Length: 285
Image (tube, rainbow, N blue to C red; front, side, top):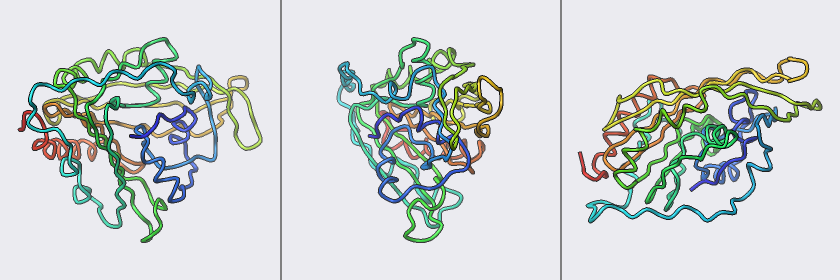
């Protein structure tokens, strides 16, 4: 699956004044589990309690052990039929489909939330999947210009031990609680100007049980980043983002939309995703 992003990359995706990446870089970044938008901002910020280099550093500890599946599951592989389809989108013309699969991947909700928890000494709290599949749907402005348009949808679909799938949604509030308000501080560079900036981040679970066997809508909001010394704005405030987490049997899917996506549309797609997951779940719907 996709690699962990640096904190700088995550903040870049939440800033405005963006340019679209080239085809090869898009294909590479599409393999990153935490990708929410295929963009790079012209303003670079590193507003965190730890340095970007530390966030990007490879892990030295052993990876978590792969969990053992429940006895004699009737379904194991996750086929592409269990994912949302291009036809499920309200706008399905000129869409590019990028997909990736993996084994033993952690269930990733929001990399910035992981950074918030880590800065306060909390563990990541991730569940480990048995296997997973992800996709990114991109709209082309013109045929053959991959990534010249907008990112419409990203979806990660995981098969877990059934108990782990249930626990993930049950403990969502506990996972988010330490980050109800988090003031991130770090170095920034805007054009030729540098300094220390800060921004306030908030996460909250805004809705539950709107799809599948259980669901949660996780919302992230961020304040306008400012220079810590002068109080002057150094970038535009990021647009609030929502992530839908839906369970069907032993399957968990994590959905997010691009810049033009709306919360009602995200809830609609979450319901469609739950119905598509039914045939692949253990037990089936």
